[in-house]
Image (cartoon, rainbow over the protein chains, first blue to last red):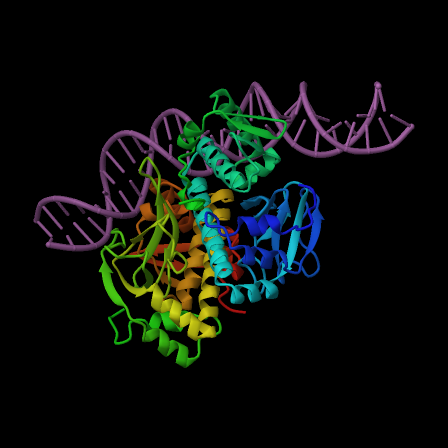
Length: 242
Length: 242
DNA sequence: CGCAAACTTGATGGCCGTCAAGCAAAGTGG
DNA sequence: CCACTTTGCTTGACGGCCATCAAGTTTGCG
């Protein structure tokens, strides 16, 4: 996405989900103070006075939240696409328990928490939208736990694709069963709790089944219903519509 | 715990974590309207006008949040002990994406969300305590994702024990490296993303290593440091103290 | 004391991790 | 425009962790 005159427009449009915010509130969001940073792929999203005082808003590209283990292995906790607020809830925590990184080259807006807070005090609709955002984030965490804990590789992968497709569709970055998939297999592995080798084999399986196609960082879903079945996917936890 | 004259005392005492609430706020919490239900072990915590309108507060026993898969298998998302508020955040959601069940016989207080909400508007300290509670819940979700996604059975089990010990200690239900462990191995399996058989073998391994002992629903930790190492456990995400 | 639920243990197999090599694609510099 | 390099993808061989199935054995409770 080209840098626009109103960079926070993606955020303002997306907040509220199925019931978009009133124009006044959207304007208020676009008037927030912020600065934008471009983060190269696979680089951490942190700077001197980073996430502890500022809320991140993804304007372009994909990012993730992750934790590292003692032996250096990584678990990705969540993937984020344009319009997402990866650390909306983590303010006034003495120290964050997770890291944030760019999955692709990404542009991220940083908004001081203080200003966000003020906004929620001035607009009940925005406060409500933020609460909704937090609820969906928690529900998404829950879905990941279940996926990683109880589903096999094929189901996990299918589930993740379904989730990402709907989330991208909601911000008009996916349509007609096609979506960008600009992420390395090794990152997918960290997200799915697998190894890159096994992600590759699983992908091959899904391709051979005719469920999806993935070429040149573009993924095509050949049969949405079957993919949902394969992933035991039920979209209600995303609360994208009523 | 015997039914006391102030059933919500556990909650009032625990909220705020390392910086307990002022007496006035604790009194306000104990004055909330509520009703108490006793739920038998392995029964769902739901009734006609249950969790969607009422916030649950665990007074005694252990409970869990869980999701079911299409094939009937179960993933436990979180375990809850006295003082916990398992569904603090899930109000004004059209439909919950998870179930709640008693792990042991449990007594649960139900408080109307409306009254909770009012309380947060009247007391900044309580509002803050609830926010903190939500943050810790989210951090705990993240720790579970990492555990299930990237740690083997032994590490997962050790990690869970460490977490539960500290949480029980915080409400004075554990001390001197001993804690109650009133949960079936098959439930542990659902929490850890394993099978009951493998939980049993893993437990045997930890016992043989001399790390823990578990008899008659009582768990003794022989070496806290070693157990933390075995589980790659770092307590900071629980935010129990500064 | 008797039954049911939960724990324990063994045998077997499969999913997925690990190691290793080759291939394709994308970027770089001359 | 093309060697060259780097990064990421693909595939094979092998092994281990954990699931599954199938007995017992112990514990708890009426």
